[in-house]
Length: 74
Image (cartoon, rainbow, N blue to C red; front, side):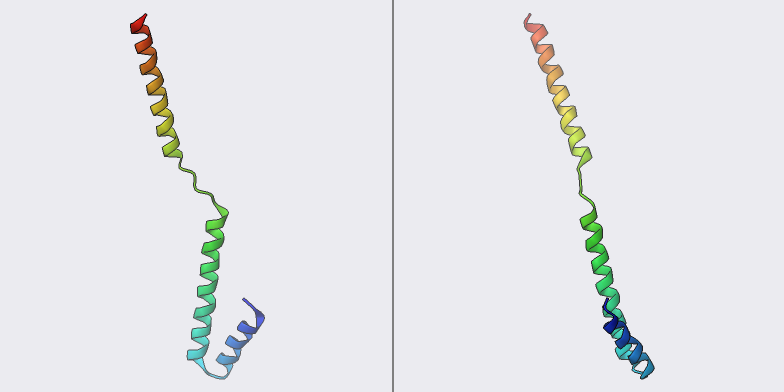
């Protein structure tokens, strides 16, 4: 947030324009909240661990089924 916006809020309070100061403060806090959410989202990368584990389990099951069929054919 720029120093001008903060100065405007303080000046509005000093001039007893509380409604204006309140709306400016709300805008400032909303912008900070949205920026924080975006920063948080960009900081992490989603990895589906459960899906990978399920695929690995399916592959091992298929391999064991193939080995059983191979033994039966021998």
